[in-house]
Length: 334
Image (tube, rainbow, N blue to C red; front, side, top):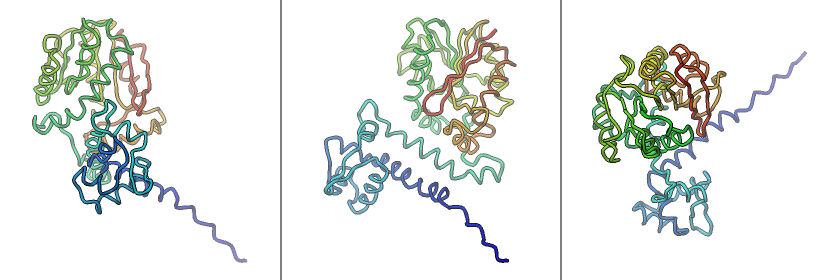
């Protein structure tokens, strides 16, 4: 008796993922070329927009229609205009400008292209080495991140009442932007930023630019090896634990705990996975970037953080989820 073969499953999921990259690449190119800023005063033709950014109209035209398809531009009667989203976030000079994020996207997406290679070879193929990198290599990396770090510092200081603290420890603080923002928000707060010797000269530059060298001390210290010098009633670790292997994360938290006074608070800002390891989606995706950039770093689960903090002597562990897949884990030293 003849049997009918089962119908194959739809290829729609594969096609959807394959096609999604086109809008992402169009957005990246539009941000790099700054096509949105000349449109802030109203619609332009391809020719006039090309003249404004000094490119060929024939080469620009396919990108503009791709940006329309990506819902970042609108077109009517041959004239292109910003959408409300692009006009708010992608026009250079506006306070809400987000266009320079293309540098981070480029770095992340280039790393993602090497995922299979990193897994096959068992080593990150787009490695970031904070210990061995030169100032010339590291300075652009940190400068791209500085405004976001300052914004995070403002949010932390206001949301968690940093005015109650006296001396803040900013662990692996990079530009010191978090400590800078916290001190600007809290007039009596003193801070110490610790990072690796290759990074701290860059940190000092940013602290000096902010005019806070009298309130923010910058010292070189690898918290994987020893506690920072001093006594602190609060510590912040932003995007730090996620660049470490699990055994390194344990050591770092133990050393931070040793530097904190009894009752001192710790705040960990970063990408934290739910215990299913399937959400938030941003943290799941960033794990692919981390395996390309770091020897052992990854988005760890909430339960892993709770266990490490308990081992280090912390209690009252709480997780607060933020937009963009970020979480803030706070705890108190017993």
